[in-house]
Length: 473
Image 1 (tube, rainbow, N blue to C red):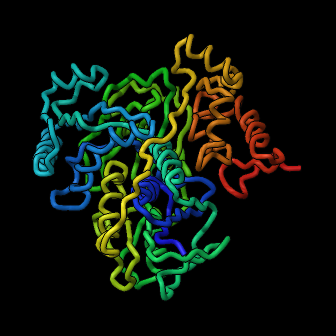
Image 2: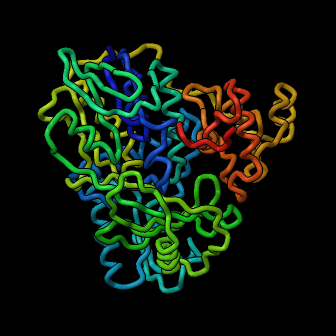
Image 3: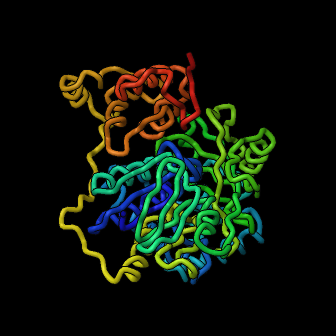
């Protein structure tokens, strides 16, 4: 019997599990996928929003503002890249400028610091590649960029190091109330816990309905993106938004934390909670819309396209509360944008809810907030590289030429707590396959290393899930 079961190992579930691991509790983190961060977390805009967009008085506004302030500390503790590069919302006409002023007023009510409405001249000085039709905009210097999947993986690793059990490939098929709490039925095993925290993303409504009547609905909203080569990663210096509409923040142009250029997303309401397909029509729409911001985006340097699903609730706000008909069952649902930005504060808020249910929680005296640092070989100077290779020659063997990733880094990613078990899990942790060739050169070598280190036949190595075989006998 666990004290707490967290369902869903995306950015919210891993943040919640890590926050819970500060206390003397027996915790299990469950996910239906073969790796953490395998849903919305691996396919989004990767923006830590300043917090001016959410309506004052909502959980989105409150937790975005708080969550943004926590990013520096948590990313430093977990050795995850994070950059506060600031954001600009640009206007090209009077109507859009009126929207900018509304956002500024909201930001002031949400206590967002250092915002400023800029003139055309001020914006062009900061972003000389923008189109000349910009007339003004809103600058928010506290906005940032991060790698969401790397952060979730680091959170899971740190949570495991602090005693959390991670159980992957555990698709929840039913939940029953029992005398001491709940029994969670998965395709692999049954798991009992006194308290359950539902962080199941686009499936949070379905998980909720296993224990209570229908109280909210999650609609999947698909967004598609282009990723461009690092050679054009400096086209912009900040996250550039167009003036928002009722459908969202619109198509953005932004550098990524690793130096690429990100363009997207579009907005498309769909029914299928698994449909992350891209289409030429929607990608063409993204490119057309992005050219309203910058007409010189070199889309011929696109290295990949992808789509992600946003968990859009019918309530209009985050749903973070105990289910009325299921005591001890906490929903953390409808976490669409600015969910990533709010995630550390959502974890705090959720654990406070649990404390109120339990009465009190005993803090651990041996909680370890830091994880073991990641050795990023190409960031070392020549002397440091020589010392590392002398100690472990595997760091002298380049596996991924595009991203300059070594065998030593891949082996380390496999053997960490919550380590990689699939080709895509390696890709998300240490980036082989994220460069120009998209794994064409390094993919087979990554498979060989995985097979060797995990003691498996190479035909057992999968791309990203139990049935995604790459080689067959």
